[in-house]
Length: 180
Image (cartoon, one colour):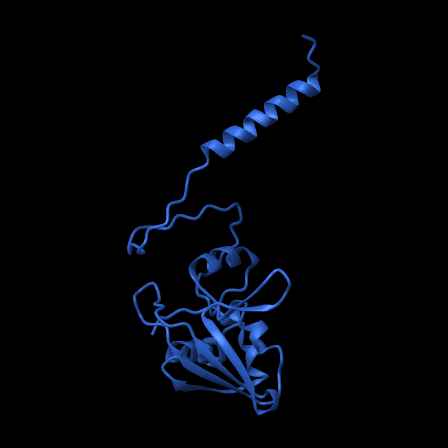
C-alpha cells in the first residue's frame, strides 16, 4: 500500500481527536448539589488581581468570576437580555424606574439567601465611594436609589430614563456576592 505523508497525518489526527473525545472525562450532575469541596481552576492567564465581584476589572478575572457568581441578567447570542437571577423586569415611570423580580430558592455559596436585600446591598456597595468600586462610574451617573419592594422584588430608581441599565447588570456590575 502506498501511503503518502498527508494520509498518515490525516489518519493520526483522526485517531488523536477520537482518542481525545473518548478520553474526555464525563461530567455527572447530582440531583441535589453537594456542598463543600474544592474548586480547582486552571488557566494560562495570570493577571488576576481579585475575585471580589465589586472590584474586579481584569479580563483574566472574567471567566473565573462567571464560574463563581451569577448576574441578574445575561445576554443571549442574539444580544437579547435573558433572565438569570432576575426572572423579569418592568420599566416604569417613563423609563426611570426598573422593578426587578428575583429568582426564588437561590442561595449564595455560604447559604445566605439571595433576595432583594442582597441585590440592594450589592448595588449600594458598588455605589458607595468609600468602597472604591471601579463599577461605580457605570452606575452612579444614572442610579438615584435602590428600593426593596418585597423580599423577592427590588426597584432601581434612576435619575433619568436609561435603557442601558439591564445590559450593565448583565456584566460585572450585576454579579452578586455577599460579604456582610
